[in-house]
Image (cartoon, rainbow, N blue to C red):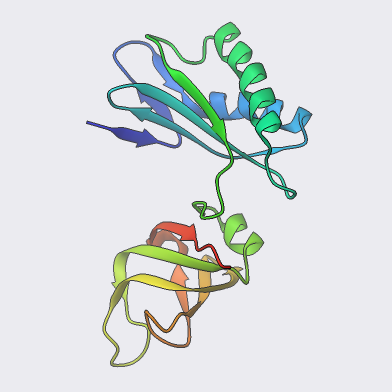
Length: 175
């Protein structure tokens, strides 16, 4: 069984691990390197993997990943933020098709193409078939709603999606 956790407290065969404290440590390191933390994931399956995704406007280099990995590894050990058995720390870029999951992400990537999966289907227009998945160009975020201009593959026009109704979303790489 695999579990992915992004926030809160993780209980894993022993002492509790606080993912927010790990995020704070990662952010301290990232700031010193001129980077930001995009996401922190804890994967429990065959192996225990702590993934830290870092970003910067000009893009992330291998040297950036190495610097954050080396510094964060020391902090995690000294502050005992990952209790229990062995784990693997992975530091990387979130990628061009990155997950987007905060209101700030929807604002930052206004104008970019995205695919969005919903908890509850929405009607893109009167008489149209309800959609639980949409693709289109992000038009921004305001008052708890994400505006998206639908791609021809999922409909037409601009719709607004309640932020709470978004299950997951990724940017689409455009060439």
